[in-house]
Structures are given as structure tokens and as C-alpha cells.
Image (cartoon, rainbow, N blue to C red):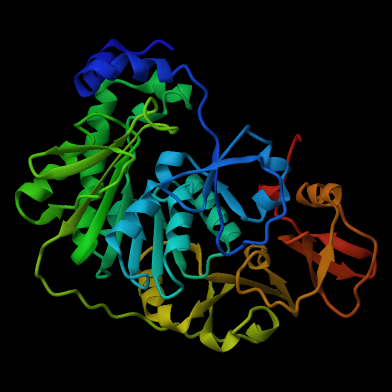
Length: 445
């Protein structure tokens, strides 16, 4: 691996005598790791789990990389394939002892690794707002959250500036900022090809813009958790120090035996280096807002829709009395009453693309359930299942398997592999029609 001279000089200044160990580690294979879904604990797969990742209780290294695409449990959201250092977020949240029922904002969410970790940490009482600028990546984020079975998320897409005038305030704001990618050189060769000092400078402009918006949205005594997959000071310490030096925020120390702690000018920052820990590169810091301003209140708009047809929530989810049925465009969603005001407010002021519990659409007199509902943690446990063998499950995920049997007592049947819910069959006299989404099918395997 040929490293840019300017990058080498930078890293020698940061690492001093350990630089040669760092450079040697970049020639080693990247570790493979997953984080288990705590809400889908009945797993029955063999992924050759090796050792637990010490800074995240539900995460494990794998002995070798399997073909995740050929594992039905992967498609059903029973685990997430995630870089080990990114899971340090779990350790930080536990160290801060943050209430588990607060408002949370993930400002740069895609593809969803940290978002699903937030969902796993916080309770259903929390309201988790996930935002992504890029429309394609936003769809990936939405799908990953749906596989996780989430019911308290609100996913938005568009320019981040659209959030700057919101009156919502958040206890936790995660900024996993776009960066020059120095920590991913080993895993993503394209990041190495694209690196330059000009790119570093361009990234700092984006990062500062995102942090300015995070500052506006952070509630008094709330936290901004800022991370990049880079090592340099320009994209890390330099981005946070202004907020700390003017006493708007204080830097929070996270005592830990893992990451390398850097403390300069009253600012704590933590770095993961591949020669010290089995991970790629990451830098992360936490600052807490010191402002005594009063929280901003907001007014939401209620939704009133007139329909000839409607959906009976009790047919589709558990605890239906706790949810309000709302239609956004053509899709009906079940929104928990405790989140309804926030949901309505954000839906009036941002571009909503998914979240809460998607129920389905009405076409004619038939309810067509959303694919996400099949994997929801609130799915009605009385809905009929069709158990599949492994090859049948994989063919279902390819949308090439449709059994010929007829279930006349029900219109919709869950395709299930062991404990993994994979999607919907529609029952008709000719058999069970496969309704696995086209854009999520297994191809060429």
C-alpha cells in the first residue's frame, strides 16, 4: 500500500515512534465483526463467532467473513455487520448514563450502523430521528432500520439545512461526519486514491456546517457526539475546540482502556488505531452544552384523512390501542401516541421517508402490507407463518419461490426461516405469491 507523502508526514507527527507499527498494520486483513439485535435474540445461525468486542456487549469478531447475503438472518435484521471501532458509541452512551427515553438525532445516518445501535440502546420511550442527505443512501438507511424492527424512528432525507430552523431539541445528537476517510485506507482502497489535503479542507467546511446545525438543535445540557473515520486534527479537534473554548460546551472525558486519549486545550478526543486495536481508524469526542437557555416549544399539525376504506390495526400489530393510524402519501403508518406530536411536527417540516411502523397500502378493497411490517417487533403474533427450509428461504429472497398451496383462511402469510421473518406471501387459489421487494432481492448468488 503506497501512502501519500503528506499523509505519512501527518501520521508521523501524531504517532511518533509507533508510526512503523501503524504502517505495518495497514498491510494486515481488516477484522470482520457483527452486532446482534437485542430484540431478535432467538438466533439459529453459525457465523463462527470468535471473541466479544470489549467495548460493545452485543458485538463479536468473526473468524472469517461468510457470504452474509446467503444468510436469511442477515436479511431479517438479526444482526448488523459493523466496523468494530464504530461500536464504541455503545460504550460512550453507557458511560454518560443518559436517560433512555429522550429525543435523539442522528444527523448523518446512512447506512444505519450507528442508528440501529441507538435503537438498541434507547427504550421505546425515546424518539429517534435519523437524517441522511443522499437519497440513495437514505433508502439503504430506511431498509436497515426496517430490518431491525424499529418502531420509534423517524427517517428524513434532504439537505441538512432543512433541519436548521426546526424547533425540536434533542438530548443526544450524533454527528458521524463525512470525512476524508483516512481510517478506512485498509478496508476501502478508493478512500486512499481520493485522499488529498484539498479533500481534507473541503470536508472541514461540511463538518463545520453540520456542527453548527447540531448546536442549534441540541437542548441545554444535551450532548453532541462527534466522530470521523480520520486521524488528522483539522477534521477532529479543530472542529470542536471553538465550542469548548467559548464555554458554550464542555468536553466530556470518557474513561476507557481501549481508545487512545488525547487531551489538549481542555478538549478530550479518542482515537482508534489499527496497530493498537482490532479495528479500522476512528476519532470521536463528546461535548456537552452549557447554555442555560430555555427549551424551545413547538406546535404540531394534526392529520385528518377521509377514507372510504381503512385498516384495522388489531389485524396487523400487537397493542393496537397504543397507536394512531396515519396515512402519508399512499402508505399507512402506526404511530405511538407518545410520539404523535413530534411525528406530526417533523412531518410538516421535513421530508419524511419512513419510520415508526409501516402498515401498508389499500388497493381496491385489499390491504397490501408493507415489507417492513413483516419484520416489525410489533407484528401481530397471530398472523400465519409458512416455514421454509434454507434453500426455500434463499429462493424466497430471490423471489423465485412461490409454493402451490392455498391458505383460504387468510390473505397474507409470513415467509419464515426458523425464527427469521423474511417477508410476505399473498394467498390465492393458485398458491402463495411471493411479495419480496424487487430492490432487496438476492441477485447473482
